[in-house]
Image 1 (cartoon, rainbow, N blue to C red):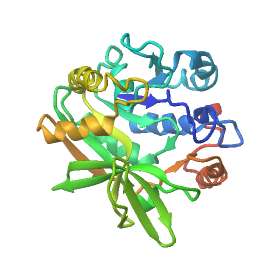
Image 2 (cartoon, rainbow, N blue to C red; image 1 turned 90 degrees about the vertical axis):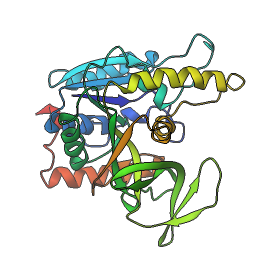
Image 3 (tube, rainbow, N blue to C red; image 1 turned 180 degrees about the horizontal axis):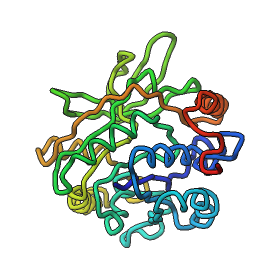
Image 4 (cartoon, rainbow, N blue to C red; image 1 turned 180 degrees about the vertical axis):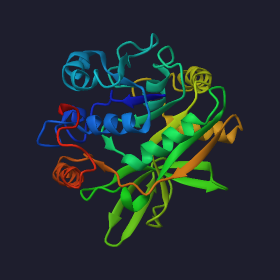
Length: 294
């Protein structure tokens, strides 16, 4: 099984490459904890999606620590021939499409700057191990909204609608805790509404088979045609691809619940809580001190 880590984003709200911001006393990053959890869950390869200009710093830091523990491959997310001057990545769905020639097995995707928790990796790995590589049944790890919030502002989350354990819709929203309420505002327009603490939300941890790539390629070609007048700003996003596949009955997406707590550095002010939370997990022996530096 492959773990695909999307790390080509610029981290604009945090400032700089937040994917390589140390979050423990040993200099480990959130990515290191993700890889550690993935290895324990049975993943045998990690594919990093990065910008080519960041290759050396990734390889000299993250890669150097984990290459002896798990197979590692790097994929560069660049532009397309129709718009070679664009510097901003084309979005999460395009990032995954860039892995088409590197992926040969069922795979999970995650964001580089999110801590997902051991339970999530265990459950996504179990799904992948039991799924046929040609299947168009995918999966999403569903978090409880209250477990995914920053104390320092709103964060983008996918509000999930389900039926009989399967995803029927995913609404990308700005989600924020205001007082004792959790409020969600759809990013594409719509009224702000209160959601329950246990509302299922997506943190971009999906489980896919290689069958996804044909969908991504045809969808990206259509995406470029539809956005030919907006190629500097448009983004090809995996939640939108997933929603379209569901709407057109080309795929199903099983929603797998996790009670895990998310940690991440959406804002600079989030870092102290992430550091203290990780330390508590290490002190409780959920992780060894130093991870791969043992």
